[in-house]
Image (cartoon, rainbow, N blue to C red):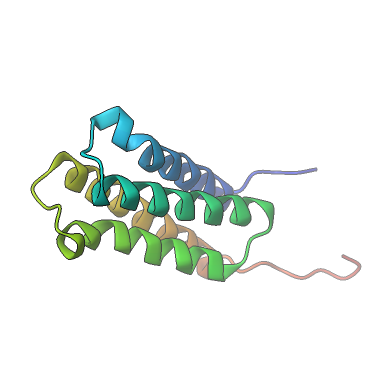
Length: 119
């Protein structure tokens, strides 16, 4: 029986956030160029890592999602689109992705998987 755990719900939420970031240039009317390209690339990375984590959990996926979320937070300043709607979207989604990835890592360390005989 395939039971969804809290970790899977975090991965699903990150998948949705990645999709929102990919679609955000159209939803929020970003200017063409660096803000849109960054949203597409970062959103795709977050979504792919989330799909990989849903398929088979590995801690490296959560660490990379944490890094991708941090990139979304700092990229407006590093790429020069601060003070825009694109910045707000990147920062909010980045904070949510970081929080979910950190929560998932915390859950994993609090409740490590148990090995049972015969499984």
